[in-house]
Length: 200
Image (cartoon, rainbow, N blue to C red; front, side):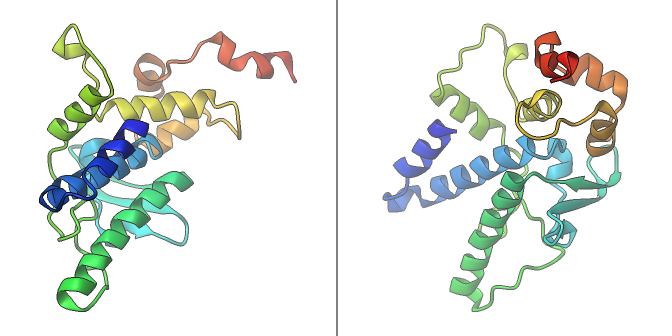
């Protein structure tokens, strides 16, 4: 994330880079949101402000993504903070341009400050990974935003601070199956469970 922040800073004082900076700010918050919610990318794109439960720190998905998922997604605090930053940028734009700052509940949340939804983050994410120094032998090995779903599942199963999620919990949160978690998302190994196995 240091590289993502550095890219944002680099475009801060360049008036001609304003659009670039807004895209990089959104990209940063999208990464945080996905890595701390377990949502699919196509689900995230459908989130409206109506679907954000600020009191509980949740997102309520309504016929979201290809699976037309209806469920509540419990966000980690860092994901709530990312959504808050997106909302504040939108409200600042509204105050400056229409003299009001109330968010339209039916408006898509994952958007630039002017309200334009961003449907494709592929190039922005590739550029960020390139600046991070990632080199891939094959295109099929390339990280994508979907990789953050894997990150979420693995960290949930193996975190060393706080309570770990059970596979059953992830089935509900991520709208997937135990088989999928065991086969594709659970990149844990026996060392990750040493404390539990020792009973300490």
